[in-house]
Length: 258
Ligand code: N1C
Image (cartoon, rainbow, N blue to C red):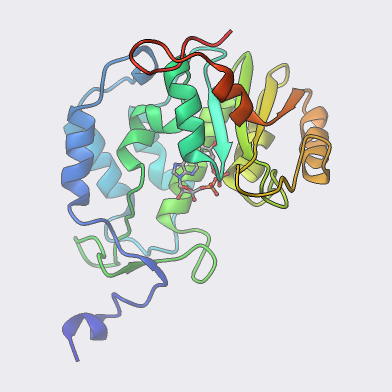
């Protein structure tokens, strides 16, 4: 029996920390393009990396709090101009495909979102290292794990900061395109400011029958959450059709949105 078995590093049910986590964070930070929404008080990648690491290193991986990430978020608070934010739920790739050619911004385009995108991380009490064997799973181990709390805190800041019209891409091939348990459902939608307009786009998988629509019960639920907050709501079925209608420009990219 190996040493790691005894130490219990493999006791969690989620993927372990990404190999070379620190190196990836550093590289992504150094190469992050300086654009308008990338504004952050500190452009010091060393400092950002240290704040990220000290948020969770040596700590119980099931006891993450918002406060653990405060310093990191303060160093690189996402700020995006009005009308440019695109949110999503279960549709990350499509949302990015929609956002990019139109100059719109998903959370992964902001500095902290881009640092953490697709990575996993957790520590171990009393150890200076990341646990590369396993990290807590949201369902099977604990909800207050460092990955979940990170996306919750960052998503909340992103949604709170949004102004004008915010768009969201939802999957209409699911039974519930709007899921109250998702980060969009439990964190972003309930934290939009009054007077913001949320424009929802439902996407349907070409191979599958549409299961939810703008008139379905999950969207009705979203509408009611928003109306309590004085957020205006517009819903459109079938984003894919809209994407297809755009004329590709010479370099094969989509033109600017109308
Ligand atoms: O739970 P979700 O989607 O509704 O979260 C998506 C929502 C987006 O609008 C983003 O602004 O929340 C934000 N967000 C991310 O940007 C993000 N990048 C990567 C939330 N989660 C993000 N991840 C990881 O995907 C994270 O581990 C989280 O648990 C999943 C959420 O995916 P989902 O269920 O499709």
